[in-house]
Image (cartoon, rainbow, N blue to C red):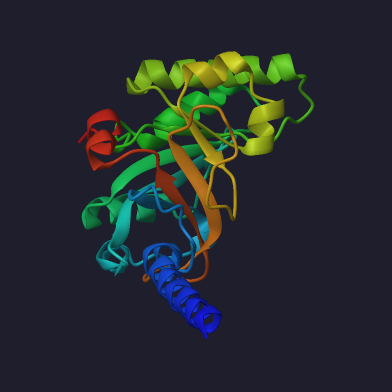
Length: 244
């Protein structure tokens, strides 16, 4: 009888422990806006382009789930030397009117002139660089060697820094950062890293934004959207990055 009593007590305690575990841990990982966010980061945002079509930005800014909201958006502005994203103007104005902090990004074409690309990006922004730093989206190497690619990236970054007076962010995937971007550039510029479907960042280098999913579901946006977090709290976000 004593053994049975002890066993019953153990089972009861185990049940209580499990219920507390679910309450304190598992529920923390409840989906927010259709994704499972890394729980230690509270400043959430998205990035958009023509692929999201027309966006209702007033609906986006009002969206809240689990105490989270959309704090920021990175908007595709240009690609290469002559392509402006068809939704850039609408998104740029819409996010501003909704009060969402914005940054513009350029998709880098490695086989085109980095000077022309930088000046094209700057001209498209038309003295309105947004509240967040500009971003260089690097996903291709083209026909360039690693040295040539990094030289061209640095030319773009240097020109944009000079004209917009804000050090740009480098966006790339974890694999691309590890194998294609030089250590010097990774140390010299803020990093926004694409690393999907994980609750912990595996890359050991410094980063400030993490694109952790491409399956976000936000009111006001048809279909899926990329979801991001900022590495820091709201004080760091506004003191280090945001300029009005």
